[in-house]
Image (cartoon, helix red, strand yellow):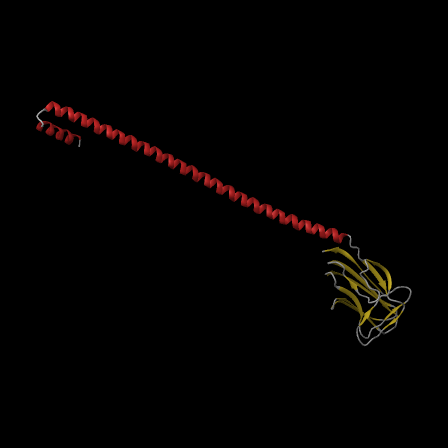
Length: 236
């Protein structure tokens, strides 16, 4: 392209009637062209520098964005961990509060039948142990013979029975609400005794009581042969 420009300038110069004048014009044109090219090159270089600067800024922003996302993720994980710790602490506090409330609950009773002969009856009959030996917490009623659980927990119950009439059957039943838990029986051959015990899990308000089995009898005097006892092992 440079040669073509020089040739064009030479021809124009020749037509104008002077080689020296055309040579001078050609040199000036060439200088102007190179000057413009250098300016364009510099401009392109400046634009490349600006473009690289923009690229560096974008890369820096992307790095900052990734760092921000990582910090947000870490904060969310920390928040989830704090919530989990808070829930555990809340549950522990509730259990501790429940334990403090129930730790002061004292439940224990023991009662015996009044002296006399009981049965035989043709139907199963409630046994009411009216002689209260101990009744801590007042959960046992000597009027009904029913123990009512004041708190949810594990309870221990024990009973004894005795009959002195030869040949007469003896049988008693332990109930939780309407469910029979224990049935014990013996045929009397003189002074005959029986006893048994059980650990029961009770909800608050559950009832435990004894019944005399149908066609069976018991005997009691001041020696306290027939007893019904229980106490709270621990609350749940």
